[in-house]
Image 1 (cartoon, helix red, strand yellow):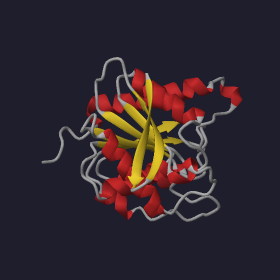
Image 2 (spheres, one colour; image 1 turned 90 degrees about the vertical axis):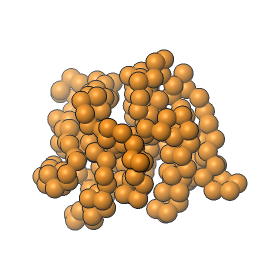
Image 3 (cartoon, one colour; image 1 turned 120 degrees about the vertical axis):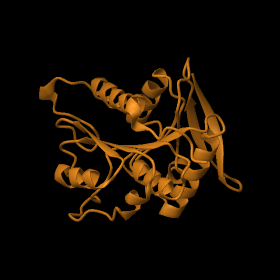
Length: 225
């Protein structure tokens, strides 16, 4: 079952969220943020959200203000983070143990939020945008070292925004980081047709890797005092 919610992220300003409620909640809850090019209704977002809920995790997606307003260009980082923080507070009403997850930009915003908020028990990045589009030099990643929660980087081996060598080196430097590779997938987790792997199969694999990481000790065991 999916419920539509309205989240007030600033006085008088609201965005739409969708809360997928599992038949049997096994926890933790998951806040899944969308990437720069599409909102929470994109098939990738809906597919991951629904699969995580089917696996027993209360999962919420939301639209950033620019998507809510029908604009194409993402908001400034401070606006994105304010909205993201409000969505986290709303989801925490239902379950205090929350994993922050995100596709591309949404994952990067989650990482900045977690660097200053110790409440999250884990982070999952679906295609972390280590290198900005059209650039060759990676973004600064110092804030990742400030995150106390475990992190899972899920990446395609053909992702041009996360060159595998650079990402492997980054994960190797981070104390609580793990890496899951999707063979021959690009930044959108598309794979060549010759592999005979459908989009649904790819999403199944992403969610299976996420759930396995969470259940096999990938998360912070308890909330900080």
